[in-house]
Image 1 (spheres, rainbow, N blue to C red):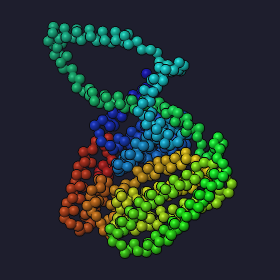
Image 2 (image 1 turned 90 degrees about the vertical axis):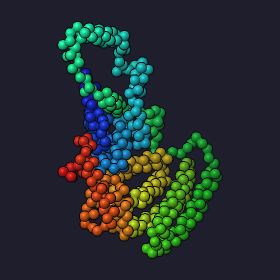
Image 3 (image 1 turned 30 degrees about the horizontal axis):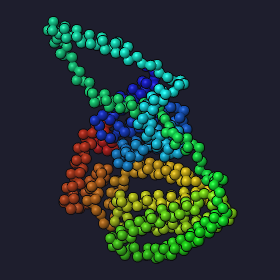
Image 4 (image 1 turned 45 degrees about the horizontal axis):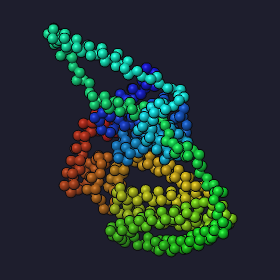
Length: 463
């Protein structure tokens, strides 16, 4: 048997050993390492480039994060990073969202596609010989049937032989384990035979980031001039409007210290909702005016300048909203919803900055898609490295003016030891103390019941 098939077979057995009847833990980190090693062995040239190596490092980081925290975001990030790495093997120069599509397609249906391609290809270097099923049926089926017949005859004729046959125990053969191993073989066979979705991948390869002047469609200079004037007037008016909004918003900042929780919460959420709509609308308007040949008319600099001012003013709104949210966090602590607001503000800022780059450097929409999805992937990987539940708990215990312990208890077990330490060092309500002690005891029991595949960092910590 050739080395490639042996590698896939060993990987399948390891896959089943790691995951069959097991929860997520150390096994996902080991699977991450196994995947990287197998891909490096089977596709050394495709994995040996900066783009793919960067994705592999991100994938490895998520695997370590799962072992350390086993948070939902780290597991999701690990799955997405796996798909990205497989897609990068398919074509490392393609856009990351095309790599996601190729990665999913390869993981699910690569073997079927390769099989049918082999059947339909007239010239195939690895064409397989046609299997003579009738021949193998005769070779395997007939001897097996005859052996079974003779075994039954001998059992009837010899009690000692019958007793010996009865002692043969095949219970060690676990059909479910074998099927799970088959799934592992199918998975590793697929990812080591990367394929590309066509014509999507080819179109992506051929499409650059620079916006080209459309010479096929004639647009009269008068129409372009009229559109430029409309854009300029609209941007001037929007700049005046957002300037007044900013002035009033800055003046309002001085009052947020005197607000009660409900007022401050309403201010933050209303501000975020307004920011969502205004920034999406801002980006759409900008993309409309700078979608085509208007980028190449004379004296477009004036329109670009007022557009850049509007982008800057929108970023200023983001900053003010961030200040409000930070004030809210300082008073009432961290929650996932409040962290989500911060992430949205970051994403909004990135969207505005990439839109600025699109306009200033005359880029096309493909550039926006590529750049923003790349950044989103990096943010996801970095987010998976943070133990959010523990971070929220630590911050709230040490900084929040009003501590919602019940909220912290309902978070995952990642904050259990921190809460236990808080109980031991502080006087708190007895009912809350009992709930924390129960959570701690149940978590210790879960850790002690973990198999080696399910182990996480806290298993090492308690020992």
